[in-house]
Image (cartoon, rainbow, N blue to C red; front, side, top):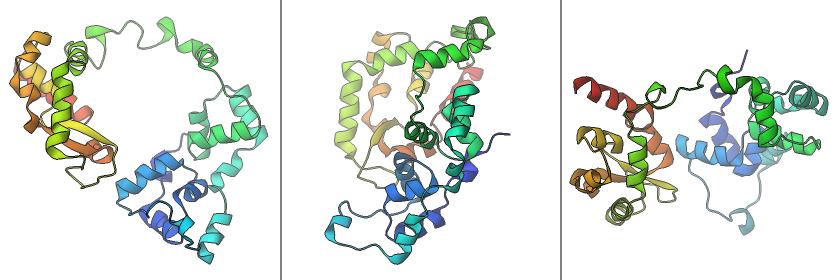
Length: 259
């Protein structure tokens, strides 16, 4: 049975304990078994204040507790990633790095690190597709499910959205929202980025509500390029909004049910 990876995510208390002892995020990543990039996002999500860059170079010493924790090394689960184990799972049984990570209880990046450590070649895209051949063609449950037959069909607005996003008016709207609001997250006040420009009333909803069929219709729709309908958000805050991902699809479904 696959492990629920969220249960393995380090808690705020654990991360604060490790970080306050003087360890860097990179050193903590080796202890908890998650990548540095993932941990940076986790720190921001949990609201853990990070130190200024270069603090170590300023001569601030590690505490004895930090040295002890750092010496503990990787997530204990990673000890299962022996050369024999990886050769059996990855080479002989053709499991993916993510499948192995779920089985062991670590990040896929750790699996790739150990493959490199033991000089086990990771697969090319072509080799991966060859192994997954049983899922290609008519054997794939999504075979032929395009257009209106696709589960994520939204009425054919995807192509129009791409066209609009490449237009001069959209690029100008994007720039004007930045100019009006500044490069600061409107929810948490973070100024470090990276940022995303978010439509308060979703882009796709405006297209459906205003019955926009082509780029000419879009260019004449003032609501679509209203800078008051745009906001600057950091990625973690953007993901918390009601209109992110499936939230917009639910809104579209409700709108279409009334048309």
